[in-house]
Length: 314
Image (spheres, rainbow, N blue to C red):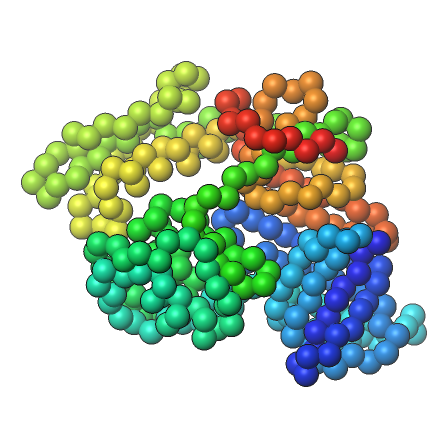
């Protein structure tokens, strides 16, 4: 059973059961998860601000309501809701332009995130060498991402109760599936997506003499070379160029799956299928309910050599 727990602007709670249709999307490259749902509404609901979707006893989405619409027709009264997860608060708020010298997340949190309703953080509160420059037009999400990328080297993670995790210790789960509920598998090899070599120019007076090679391209006979001038750009250091190669390699093989039912998973979790030696790193999840039927569309990268984690079989 799937139900929606709703909170109105006065703090009162309401329930809607068994959606007519429901759609949740989680994408590794999108800061906020998205939600759309249509329900039968037996009573008129007040203005709503928060929604939590509960499947059985598990919370599978929680976020801020962007739009609610009441529909009255000969078939009855319906309500549709569009929402985004809590990260949307950071996307929707612009940060005050300033420069922090020797920044600590403790200070950044108190100035930028606690005023927006975030309750706490996990991770280091030490000061870091260097400057955090916040320019005009940066969102609070951009501030958080820049701090984590520049000083910690991780992606931030935010819980539904407003705790920001900058520890970088989140470990992807490995989920083991049988073939039973897999309705559709589409495996694509995209040779055109792989960059074989990047020759980088790192100094104004230098040449393109720093060479980065793709092991994936070399192994599979792919030749797509690029020259990259990183002087005077926002690309900083050799790690950024290596990341470009890694991102290119990860796009070489892709898999799309339609799964009948529900899998408790998140982007970056690892899927393995009985009888298949490949591992699939989740990039995007689309969970759908229509006329009571559950399906999940899962889009992944394909990797043969993935670190082993504790498995959960479904």
